[in-house]
Image (tube, rainbow, N blue to C red; front, side, top):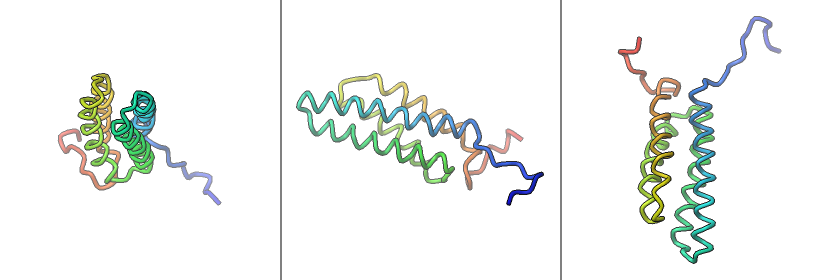
Length: 120
């Protein structure tokens, strides 16, 4: 039973934004996978599907504030931005780089990642 004076642990807003952002961006990759599959470009469709699944996994791991999710999310955002080249569609570059920036700004909310000392 919870003590009456104990506060519930809330998720920081930056974590909520970063995790949700990765999950929402997975929808973009799913839509791209669908259209590439309909166009007969099955290999690119598989790439897009893999990116969508990885975005969902990283988004959930961000909610748990797992340290590997922070590093993996940064790498995934850069790789996904580069994946816009075989799609011949430059739009994903913007959201992916924005998510990388948002995720970078959440570094102090993850376990085991030292926060910038100049901020204190």
